[in-house]
Length: 407
Image (tube, rainbow, N blue to C red; front, side, top):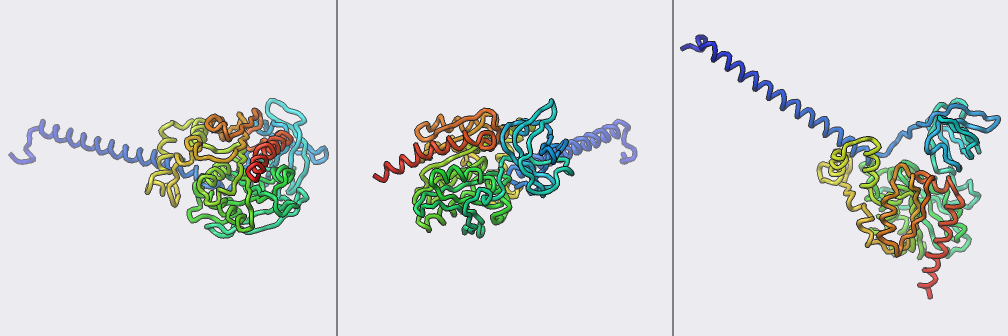
């Protein structure tokens, strides 16, 4: 029988088989496309974690500015309604105001005192960026400031140095957090000077001040510690024998990695941490919940960061294993006194890991808790509280232990 003379039922069955194969093929194609889309989304999440934000978004609506009465009315948020002193950038970062006390609130707005307008015309601004770092340069504190370049693996990193009157004074190295610069740390200069310390305000790779790394990505502390190690090396070459490290937010992760990895860690007599990242898993979990991301998405993103070859999807030159950055799990490796300051309403870096570290190492960790100071704004909310806690710890713990070991 010729092919053209096949019974009708054979033709129908053949057509059905062809249709089935087409359907299966279409399903496979859809699955491949869907997997690629999901994979691209997860890779994007992982990439976002390690990519510096070059354009700082101004998200806070500015409703009114009265330069005569020196007031500004802003959208009311958990941050903008807090009493204290803060910064407000506007005009794409070209304008800057320093903001003071809350004068009044409505259900949606807050009106605050303008302490100073440092740059720009705020009357033309419609949105701004709220920030905790209050001073722009340490010169505003009327202290002698030196500009130095610290040799680091990526090149010379600028630092501000403020020396105590005593040439043999101990040193404090201040380490800023993610998405900001060394200006964030100026707030702590007065208390360390009051305690008799010389101070280094350090920069680190990819912060917009220090040299960029090859990949231009955050190592979340796993690479940035090398730049603080370089500061310790620089201080050692100048005869330093006693150093306190202080870190804010991701700067806390940088400080903790310095403590467990640096060849110069023996110089460190104590660590101060403000709103620190002690465990990145806790941070990413909290942020994922805020974004309503499914748990598997976070887990796969974390795996991408740490898996060789796959890590390249994030732009990283080397994998970043968040398990190695979990300092609660590695608490037994810590060996110097730690002052840990955190607000339980942080809103970005949950305080749970700070509490866990204090519970794991009560022998060396002193935990000081606020409840309404938000993230990295403990000084802004209550400078007296902030300064008193640091000064007491320096005198009661670090300097006492130093005097005892010298005898």
